[in-house]
Amino acid sequence: AGHVERSNGRTMLSPRHFSHGVLPILTASFLSGLAGAICQKSLQVHDRDSLLFTLELCAASILILLISLLASEDGKHISKDGFFHEWTPLALVPILSNAAGGIVVGLVTKHAGTVRKGFSLVFGILLSGIFQ
Image (cartoon, rainbow, N blue to C red):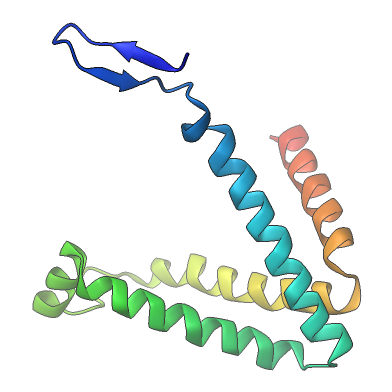
């Protein structure tokens, strides 16, 4: 159940194995819901400023990415060639749209809540699928 015997005699996990499909999705969903609830509580109950909260999350993300770059092959390329090597002005489009999306998500979480945000996300994905 979930194991595949290879011709060389090794037993490998099948791509349909529970730990490679359902379990990571359930874990990600649980962690996403937990993070949403914690963020909503912080924004609504403690009446935090959503823009400042977004900046705090951004700073934490930058620190984590910088630490991960130290251990990766990309970090070596960046230290050799520079961070903006081979960038074009078009590279700013996804960066700015992602930043604006983060601010909007913070505002929606503060004023509408995580559950409504989740329903609107599903509805947006549905509309995207219909119009494509």
